[in-house]
Image (cartoon, rainbow, N blue to C red; front, side):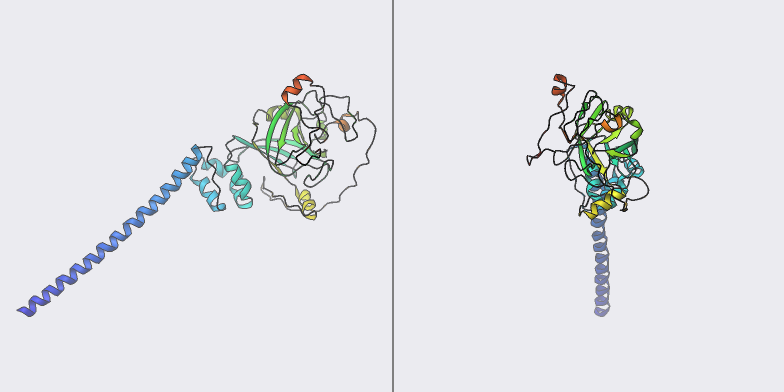
Length: 323
């Protein structure tokens, strides 16, 4: 009798042990499931807070994190239609700046296709204008090199340039006013840049490399573009294939982005001999048109009101050299 009682006790204890193990496994699974759901909700909450507060700047660890933020965003469909997902893979620093941009728009000047492109903050194209940029290829290095700078910049002030005159490197001022067109958008960077986006008195030259450094667009287009521009808005100047080739040969690395289906790749070209300087006063609109502010800095709005017919004064950069 005792023998059977002992066997019954052993079987009961074994059954309790198995039941306890099952319960233990079940309890161990629950926190994992809850934790996973909590992580998912946390990401969505972080993205929502990031979108709702323009003062929050989120640095992305890698392209996958940037793409995750786009996917979890309430504007995920806009992101998918724009250029930012591809930019995250190709140029994460630019993508990060644009995703943390609190302005409604940003501008890309694409030197390869000679276009000024306006995008909304999610990377969807809004406007497109044919432009003209500097006659020489490569990133701007110094005053008088007739190059358009490349990289990530910001919009400065917008000026009424209707009555501005152009003065060349020899100090000769053209008698023809309005060669900057009706508006001038200053481009600002880490140093005092001598360039901007402005109109033109030579619309037939658009689509060509013919300026001293500025970006020209049609007068009607500049009047439309300034309606979207605010000081501090991002402006990217993207090198073209021949610009990249020059930059590589000079040991200068400028990041690029893809604005169309084909990425930018370096392509060699024949570098033309610079034009001989002339002492004669430029009078022909195509020659006399102001293409940069290398010879003079910009007027402030107050200065324009006082003397709107004078060229802006020269302003030295931080090194004391005039740009």
